[in-house]
Length: 134
Image (tube, rainbow, N blue to C red; front, side, top):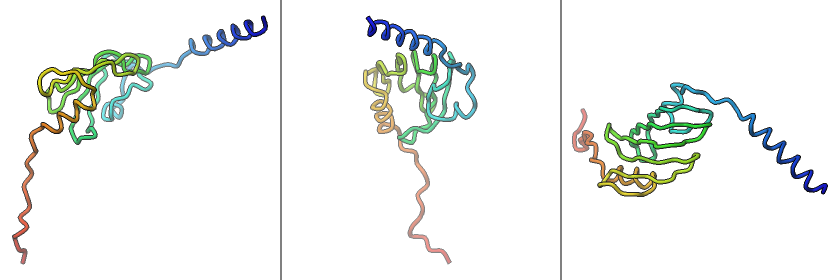
């Protein structure tokens, strides 16, 4: 009987502590918008981020944050072109529809890697190594 009472008391205490949850910001700061996408501390319907990913691409992201977690559909664009739509459920990637080479299902990292591999190379002027300077 003591174990049951103790278990109920601990469950009640845990429920009380979690129900008092934290307060979440409803507006992103400029620093948050210019960093890789995270929903830590946010409760925003139309959050947006602009950052350079691991593959050197300038990525624009729009999505929703609920209670500090990514939740709902996030849209990823590179160079103004929609690359992927990812569904998050309580901060976990559920599925990603990759739009790089037609519609395919893959994870977000593979889709962004595929986009980087198929992106047209940016042509920078090559230095003239044969030119002599006097």
